[in-house]
Image (cartoon, rainbow, N blue to C red):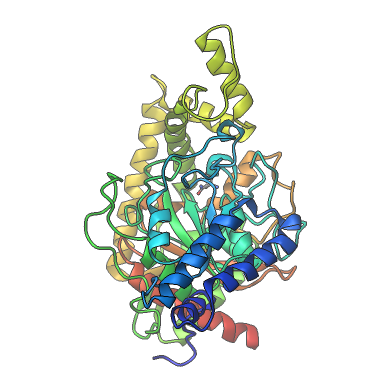
Length: 486
Ligand code: GLN
């Protein structure tokens, strides 16, 4: 084991003590429910707290332990779920009025896997409506606030999950990442957040935003807790046609190995992206230096098409969303506003049920897909996507992993970007390339900005490169502690 690399984390410690019968899962869940009751009035990270169900599943975990049955690697660990994951009989809104009152008839595969691992779901977290946004302010149910400074946003769209972990309401949470929605809020809340390789975690029961980009990912306070959670939720699922058939790489396999001899590239285009806070650029360089000091072979590398990622994403994601969201028509799910005929019913339901950002995306996407514009916009964006994959492939012929900033700045004040959609979109400039390529990426807390707010640095890896990605992330985490102690 390399010295200075931290192991474990609060989630693995809790699971170990519950499995050993030293702590009861009921006591652990009561402790976290009390923290939520005391602190979430101000933060609003949860849309629904499932206190009774949590107590019941904790009691089941305790019964298993008493009977000598191992409840699993997450025994008794409280987990918060983004409210775009279907939970049977529990409200699932995707942050939208259009799904208010809808009760899913089934659990998402991730939810089933968590239960089989002994985890205890404590509630459903707030998000930007249909996961469209970078601040959690587009939720129809009001914003979430950042635990480090409640006048600021937690990032988004999985802002509720990131805030819940940062506030200590749950040691683990689940989010979804289509263009950065796990990694960007993780950075802004000072926690770890990862997007796995596309196809690694089943999307069955995840309310679709942009199906070719959506992936479910873990939040935790440490890299090894995030790896533990990912290893539980990853794996083939016949219910998701895009789920990979091969066994997923073990995220936790090499977290203690250090980076000696690894080749790591700093992505020039992202390290110097337009609009980057100089503090973010400085922290990213420090991260690169720290990895080099830990024995990595570090160099700058160019990924030229990365600069076109944002433009391509804001055509592809809205195009897929416009199609996915066509199903919310007042017939099958949630809200219905009556009309004199079916067309009027559709129009009234969708006008009343969707918020402004969702309507903007549907219009952008419908436009990009329309006859006459399809080739100029949607098809062109797909070509950029192919170029980007080629550029990454070239980089990974020379490097084991890449690093880049996560977000262009730290947490911003509530309301400061809501009037300017483009300013909001620019938050994803460094995270989007990994979604377009289908590659894994993780954000690790690394230093602070001028106001003392947390910043994150990303580790990127090629498809199915989770093992090396978590290995580098753990070294970065150790280096962050050393840099802070200086
Ligand atoms: N912020 C990006 C968007 O608004 C990404 C969202 C996401 O990853 N779900 O589309």
